[in-house]
Length: 134
Image (cartoon, rainbow, N blue to C red; front, side, top):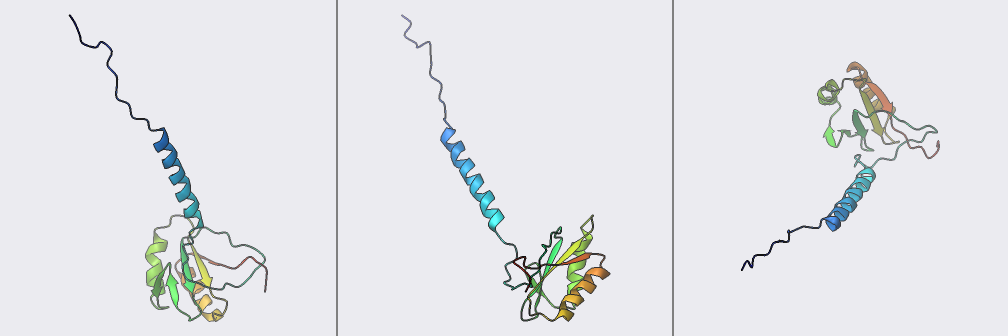
């Protein structure tokens, strides 16, 4: 007598619920990443009627205390050119330095950053608040 089962069941793992969870996590991280602001230095920007749209190679911020930041790292005005040069050298297209300055910053500091950007062959763009000119 042959008592062996002819049809054996195959073990299966159902991943439908796992796929749903992964899709929801993916959507969550995509939405959160668009809301994240890379400029963590709080500044009140000057206002303008037009928006500044430019490819941001590097962001130079000047806060109300006249402190300079490249990205989020603090630098002095003398160190600015040395800090920007390797970042701008990596860019193959026209590099752009976005100047994110507090509205109380003297114009001389903004012009100094523009001068450094011009010496390095980069275009300088001043970031402004689009909520109306004041």
